[in-house]
Length: 224
Image (cartoon, rainbow, N blue to C red; front, side, top):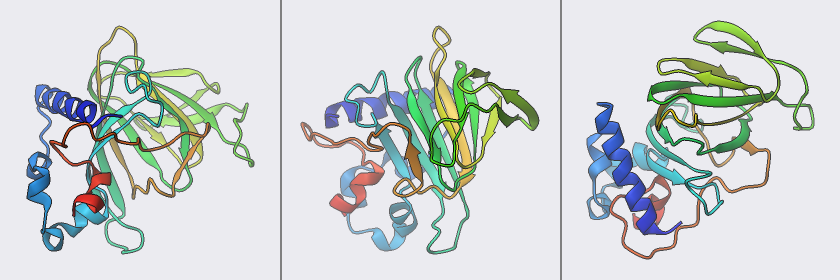
């Protein structure tokens, strides 16, 4: 992805958050220069990868396969502090987050507003393939059984609980608009806890055609 594209996506995301009256922390507005020299005060943000996360999963086609995220809070297993994470995300119509599971993390995915969110689920086999067994899942506390790969449509306000090793992909339903998505989970560890069904990248390679307006969580180490 080009940095100019990332800058544009963040600008659009901020507008969408405002439209839904979802407020970000003050440091979401900090320029790259503002971050320099403040590790001592902001180590929780930097070490736990809070903040902006824009990814095309290495596809090179963000609008087809991509996700805009902002991690609001997150713990760290090694420090044994917070044991939880919260994110806010945006998915466009038919913009896919590809099939994956988490080795350890249990998470609630919540449709916070906008359009409808489509999810497709599979149980994983012992060798991490797709199981043909039905999936029993909790939707707002109500146990629901679905066929493997069957589309589940979450309307605004609805949520689904995904336990570890449950494959899932999601995207905005065509014709229903962009979706504001919440995530509440155990500690998030993108470096070690993701298992994508296809071999893809969790983070994009950034082509620095312009300067960043806002840093991504993966930029902290380079800029600080």
